[in-house]
Every structure is written in structure tokens, then in C-alpha cells.
Length: 172
Length: 254
Image (cartoon, rainbow over all chains, first blue to last red; front, side, top):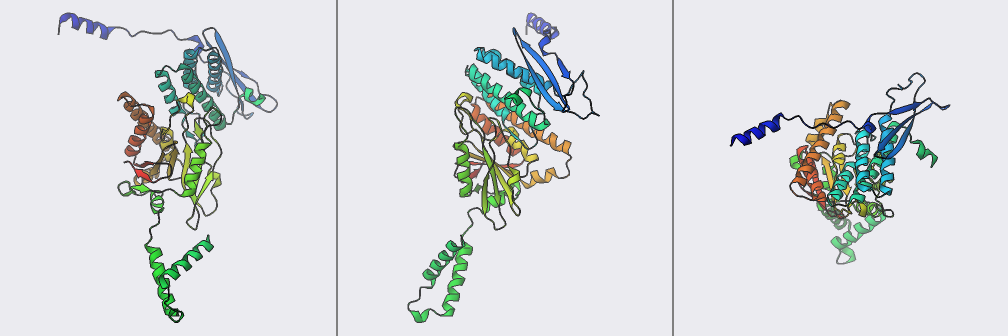
């Protein structure tokens, strides 16, 4: 092996990995509204992607003896996932499928894995794998819609598991 | 049902006893005929015996090689699949297979699921009935790739850790897949805490993901990678894995 090759390899090994500035839009920001007359609290979150932004909200009940922490309210990640879902739908409508797909994945990541009720047969991951397959086929619009639909399914399962609700759904 | 059975017995009796004349039709010949009939009925194998065995957590090495499916279950599964494509979307459907105290199998359709989930209708299990299997569909709309024949998901197999039924069945359009608990798997659950059960669920799901991604890396398409992952995961965690046409019989694959 030549010295120049060794030098190059050494340089590669000692290089500092590239760092990316944290996207402020990804920072956990949420607001907690005081309980209404029925004892239901509302946590809201806003997420932005480029020039686009959307908000999501989750309504939940809490005992008077168990006042939620305003600095880290429960279900804020679900409210954020709801915001990503709204944002993704908006982007898909405007035929920005690649961005909509990216946004759907942000929502899925932020919601996390603890969303399904215990006895549910959760096949959403398979559909997300199918979305990856569609993406590989360059069917970006189908990939984005499938991924967004799975985020929506996970949010519906989340509501069932934690007995919370999405206020927009209640208005429908 | 009883009337049909009675008629069948009488026809069989006539066929066996068939007296040459009325004088031969005595008590002795009737008793002989009944004994012959009992022998014939006893010798006839129960086509669903293997299903009962598979549902009873058999040792992995001794599980049946083939399993037949009750007619009502086949019809229920096919109807579920037919209802899995409302409009241009997909929606999982399914139900449970139970056995009553008389040994009769019954299909009980459950509520609709979503495009990516389904919940078993355990509440429909009646008094004196035994849970045998659940079935749910795996539909993919055209926009989702239109896949047909994609078997159990990692979540489906991992759910064996906590579910009530010993067999999970997936109807994938042209193929039915079954995952049955073996004695080894059932024994491994004994004494586990909820945290340990949850960890086992995660481990099984991770096995599936790794197998799926390995199959994809090896050049397999989505559907084949799904089915490969289901087979690998079942074998590793001692589940008995079957597949076959929607009307059966199901053939053991591991």
C-alpha cells in the first residue's frame, strides 16, 4: 500500500464528522392551555418546513391532583406529530411529494413507538416499508400519501391507547 | 344437523345390513350392522384434527405438516378480503375462529380496522367456546403498491406474546399464512413479567426487521422480503409457520 494512500486513509479517519445545525423547527415547542370546565387540557404544537407551518393539538383529561407540567406537557409529541401530518397533507396537495414524504417521516419519528393499544395488530410498519418500495420506484406521490396515511393511523391508535382526542376530529 | 346425521346413519345401515329378505332382518343382524357402522365412522379421519393439534401448542418438531381449514372460516376469510378495498383505499378486516363445546368450529366476523391495523373481536368469544385463531387481511390499494400475497408483519408475529389465540392467520388475497405457537414458545412465556413480555415483543419485531432488510439487500422485492422475514422470524422464535391457498390446506414451511 502506498504512503499517499495511507496518508489519505489516516486523514479520513481523523476528520471530524460533519455536523448539522439543529433545525429550530424540530425543537420541542408546545403550549399548554388550562383545563376547561370539563377538566380537559389542551396541548398544542407548531411545526414548520420551509415557508410552510402547521399546528396540531391533543386534548386530554387530568385529575385536579395531577396538574400537567407546563414545561413538558404530556402528549406534546403527539400534538407535534399531528402538526407534521397537517403540514404533509398541505405539501402533498401542492404536489411537493418529496417534501411531504420527508415531513411524514418527521411526524412518525416524533410520535415514537408507544402508540398502539396492546391487542392491536399493527401493520403500519409494513405499509411504511411499502412506501419505501414506492419511493424506490420513483412513485413519490404514492409513497408520501401512504406514509402520511400510516402516520394518521398511528395517531388514531394513539388516541385510543391514551384516551385522548384531536380537537379537529371532534369538530367533524 | 342431527337430522342429516340420522339419515346418513340409516342409509349406511341399509347399505351394510341389506337383508336378502324380511326374515333376515332380525335383531342380531341389526346389532352387527350398527357395530360395522360404528367401525366405519371411527376409522374415518377427522379432516380438522390437525387444526386442533396446531391450536394446542404442539412441540415444534412434532407439529402437523398440513392443516385444513373449516369451510365457514374459508368463506369468512374470503368475504373479509372482498371487503378490504372500499373505494380506492384499503381497510383491514377480520374475525375470530372458535370451537364450541360440541367441537364445532364457528367463524365470528369482527369490526373493520384501518388501512394499517386491526383489533381482534375477543369480546365475541361465547361461554364454553375456545379461541382457536384470528384472521385479518393485508390489503394494499393500488396507491400502496397493489401487493397481493404479503404475509404476516413483524407486529403480527410479535403479538403472539400477548394474544389470546394460539394461531394468527393472515389473508393476503391469493394466499393464507398461519403462525402457530409451539410448546417451546408457550413454555418460554411462563413466569415472565409484563416488562419481559414487552421486551420479547420488541426482540421478535427486531428479528423481523433485520430479516426483511437482509432479504431486500439480497435483491428480493417487497412481498418476497415480507414473506422471507415472516419465515425467518417464525423459525427463530419457535413458531410453526404455514401458508397455502385461501381454501387450504396450509402447508408447513419450517
